[in-house]
Image (tube, rainbow, N blue to C red):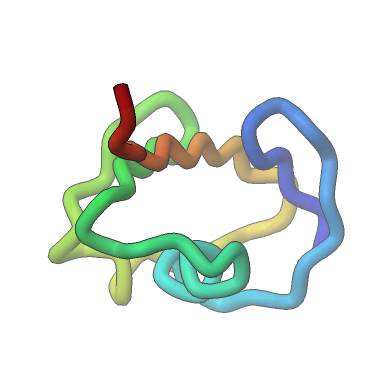
Length: 65
């Protein structure tokens, strides 16, 4: 299905928000997610159904100096 992730249109076959995080290989405890302008708590990722053309932002924190 067509989704907008971090401003780019992508084609992914996913069912939930956790599927997207796993698809990109991100560490769940270092990611903040936003769906259609609203932050989604990590505890709700499994319950957040993905629908075509959703706008999803993934922010992954990294360490460094």
